[in-house]
Length: 323
Image: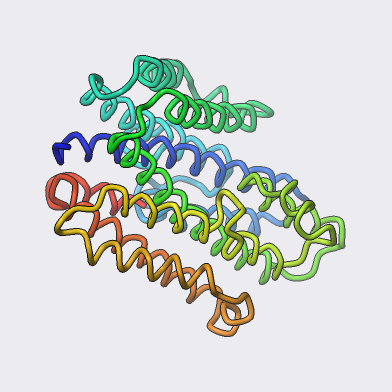
């Protein structure tokens, strides 16, 4: 496969997944901001969310207030923000258009229709209950895109690079979300039991893991169990372990003469999660562990670009720096 074709497929999938992950982050923050709390707590939550998504500095340059509607407008509609949902869906469509002949007609129509619908959305739709409805729509369109991809694409390298982009982006996003939310919930001070339950359940729901948690643990929600589910459980679709196992397997499928070191690094990271223990993660420090994971994901992205895609300096480097 031509490296440019692989590059477009890889980034098409990453941008679609990124749009969904931004929607998940904003949704959980918005729901938590509705809880009774001080203005300082609300500001701290939104600052942390922007920092997690790598957008704090850019947002502060615009002088916006740390209020839900202002931050959501920036992360949903701002055309100058390369990581806004608007920009992500536009980039996904542009990458899909560049390799339209490689995609099935169903996948192209799904991606294109999502972008057309996004163009008609405006800030009024983020007010009141409209915010949560919009975030659910973004998640649904991303789910639809993945379903059409798996259900209609030939099982060849094109599909492998699409899936590779999806799981690499998902692993990065889960680590970022868990890092910022665990820190917030652990340092926010004591709340009543109902409030704490709502906060931890909101975090689980943000990664579609609430029902899974109930099936796996059948007990009260505790921080340790939440972290274990989202890091080490290979049967949890958005966990770090699941994502890295998929990345390693896909790299084996598309391997070439230059990719041995990339496969080794991916396999090493996947093995550390497969055989890791939650006690060791907390002993190291969850923040330090997740920061290290995010750095290794970024390194893998660079390695993949060098081995298979358009050189990092032309396209992928600037895209990686936006998150």
